[in-house]
Length: 245
Ligand code: SAH
Image (cartoon, rainbow, N blue to C red; front, side):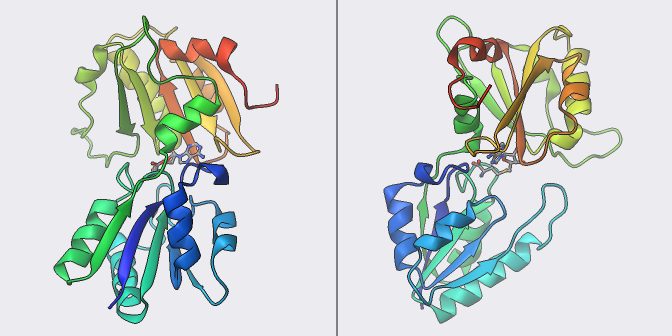
């Protein structure tokens, strides 16, 4: 019986992979990877390593999580070193906990390897700090992909009246809805918003607007993309360093 390394692949730029993640990738007998994990990481594997793609689109799950859990488990019965490679960090909307529980219940040993989350690194590459002295004392990372029941929202919008920076993951297709909700709880239409597409990669693109305008400006950006809401967005004027202007 093998051991499973539930491993964060970082947000895109391959150099943001941790040394520990690189080590387990090099030693892996099989790598089970996501759409969001940079595929160049697979080139670091030893020859003979097997690759299993369990990619999921943003909104629809190509493979249901239950099946992914089972794929990981079956591979752990077969191989000694199993790497489950996930975009960003395994615990930030990565369902790493579910995979760990599934393995625990079946007596499979596992380890978590943190990754650099897109929620912090992608804004950083766009010149947007999630906190900044004098501007904001906290930040939130929120799913933009809440399941929609007509009269019930899982997101406690009323809590978001403060000036925390809010980073929405998986929210591009709900951008208009998100902006409207924030305006509805009293944020000004002029409140700054950025949408960052394919952050930390050579295809990175950032669009800056306001709650009132961002939907029109950013609706055609390619995924993966995240949304940053907050006064910190304005710091990009001085801090942008990565993208070609
Ligand atoms: N575990 C991941 C997040 C998984 S949820 C992490 O810690 O980064 C997937 C969402 O992450 C996407 O819908 C998108 O909002 C965001 N995302 C991941 N990589 C991104 C990138 N390179 N650029 C912009 N957004 C990204």
